[in-house]
Length: 193
Image 1 (cartoon, one colour):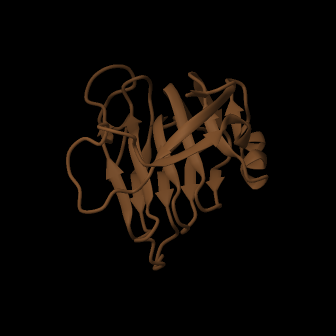
Image 2 (cartoon, rainbow, N blue to C red):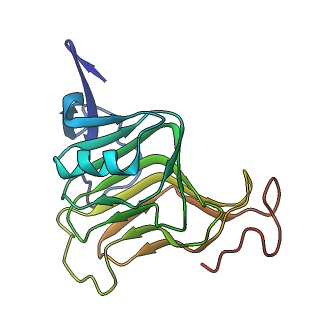
């Protein structure tokens, strides 16, 4: 959104003991200046994306298809990863597309992970196995994130989304193995979970 002459990304606050819509009145949350984001454009590499994350930047994926040859590692608490126009991340060479550390308050929203042709063990992983930290005060959220195995082309993955962290909010996801379209067949777009 535009705040004066500055573009910002609005991150809604966590609501408790609530249901229904929240757009009446002024919504609670935080506006983050766009200069706190690495604006990811088609052609960006996983190495460049990870470098931006290591510098403490959030990610704003513009519409496009992003092939990654290494895992995108989100290690900082309160990182925002936002996709516009259903930005699509495709892991190449069997890597995991994205891993989120067992940290507070990461926000993932608005993107698609499309399995690559070489089997990935996991497409999206939240926390390593045996994660046990309490994130109830500041949970990680996944909203409007989709995972697809086959349909646009051949793709394989053992596990679509692995949630090992506690207190993760998952809202409006579509996780599927295609049964029609391109790259579809019993052995073509394999997926176990």
